[in-house]
Length: 167
Image (tube, rainbow, N blue to C red; front, side, top):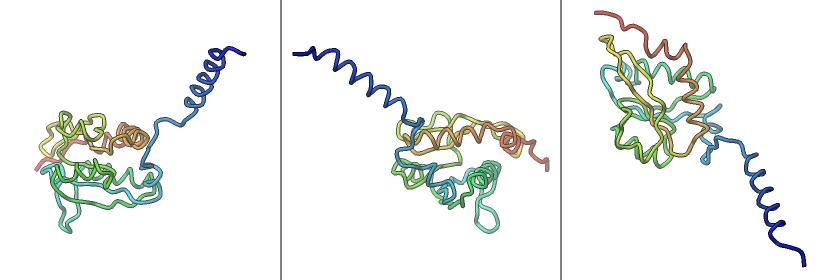
């Protein structure tokens, strides 16, 4: 009879190595894969003066410009979903949205239910800096990494932090 312990240790070591080969960070709901070349479903909270509805009803503002740049890079079309902050965060938590922008602060009460991006600075029209985060689906770490990597780019920071025009 052969000892079981060495065999068990070998099996566990093999499983650990196989687990390390899994691509990380993972997206259990495949958000990044679905958005790339597809549709990016963005919840938009009216957040004057940073985000507001334009003349045709579509959202405008610095954060909106940044998300349009992200969509172009991913060859995705944006589907805007306006709504209240809580309703949109519920949609994000249920994976009906890919991102929520507008008025989400670092200490959001939703931080236990959805993922929040790294904080970024946005220049308000009066020139004052405001710290914001975007809401992301929980557990979609590949998507979160892609969004954060994009938001950290110099060109995107320039759009977010550009000096506001003076009246």
